[in-house]
Length: 76
Image 1 (spheres, rainbow, N blue to C red):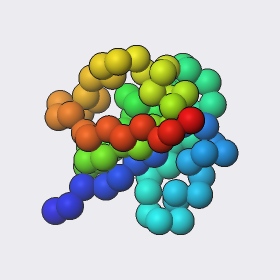
Image 2: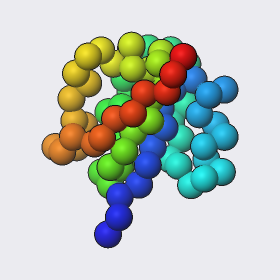
Image 3: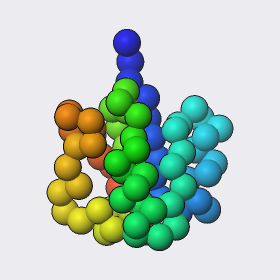
């Protein structure tokens, strides 16, 4: 089984990724980003973060599901 891709961050930056089948977790405030991170589905293998979301999570966001998903950060 192949894992899914998720995008987390400001709605205006991540909404369009849903068209490519990405699980979109729109979060415009730091606390919403942290809630979104904790709610990632178990089968997500790659998380694309906006720069603001990455800043809200800090340098080591930790794995929400016991395994570390690969993280990519969009340029600002």
